[in-house]
Image (cartoon, rainbow, N blue to C red; front, side, top):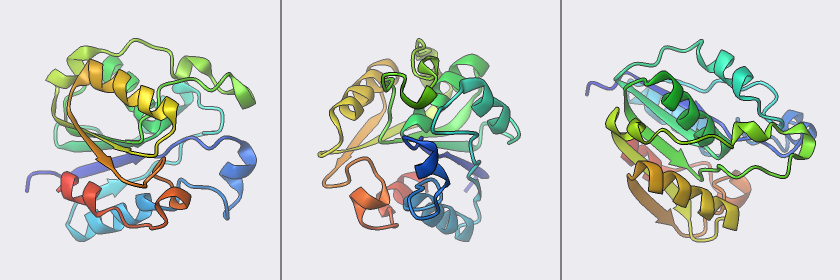
Length: 191
């Protein structure tokens, strides 16, 4: 296997309290740590950067943190929710070539500027040439995902194509929705 690295970008909690409370935060729970553990067992270096103030996502702050990590043509990038919006914008700007791009419950629709969220984080044109620099694009959604999540998936898929996988009863792919930390369907697509 020539894959050497995986970077997972977590989603954006709705407020600071949810983000900081160990009982309610989601970026270090559900499928993300489980996936990292499984990939490390397979010999794949895996990073989960903690993005700054994710309850009010700011592209430039995310970018500064993300660029501390080496991204190359053998890298798999995985985004959850707003993490997908960040990765697509970053890949469009940098024109970086990567191995796989995987979305889990992708999100691209601004949330009415609540909690100081940077509306510009979501409102950018998708560079359709990203698909020419990625070997494989995979998008996970659920039959019971929110309406704006379904709309977001359509926006990304229309621009980038790729394989869409809809699983039953996974909601927005949080621990609360999935009721499990395991995500074998994702692991299979990574490997």
